[in-house]
Length: 255
Image 1 (tube, rainbow, N blue to C red):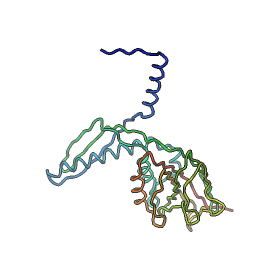
Image 2: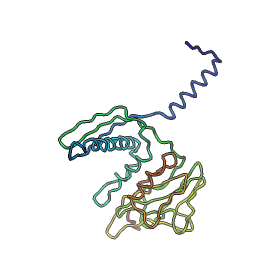
Image 3: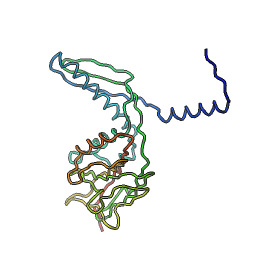
Image 4: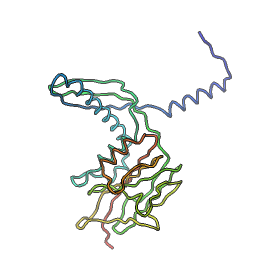
């Protein structure tokens, strides 16, 4: 048997430090479900592995959904012509956290399908210090006005998601230096992005997506798509990136 003797204040300080460290890395529980079909007995095991991977992705997506505040969904509306809200949630989950462990799993079969349900521990990602401020409503002709603040030098990439797809606004041909130190204003006196609408449209729900990273990323500004952007985000470690979305509306000006 071992006994411990020491200074009472020192012991209190050690306990406090331990509690702070524990809370800083606290794990949360999330549940997910997945399924995969198989054609024969030999393929059954592989199908269950795929089903469990889908279940873990689902658990992470649901965890990210809890972090997805109502104010961030305010102007994000999915339609047949304008389907990026779910995409935003998916890529948001890639920065929200990581699956630390599978606490429990249920696996069952029904004919040619393997179903897996998991209870997973999620470790919240350590977020970089960065914030964005901008208006929620723009009228046609208005300059896009965004104020960015960071707590350390970070690389910034700004994307615009709209019903026609995705564009990268920054860096651009007028400013290729996207290393931000403390603060940044977009648009600037050197270049402006203005709100516009297609002929016949009275409003448009859109999203500005801000990607902050510790290292410069190899993103082709001439050919960026939703798919290759998702691949880039998945390849960046969670502790080296932060994703901020800003949903806004463009209305036709009556002026």
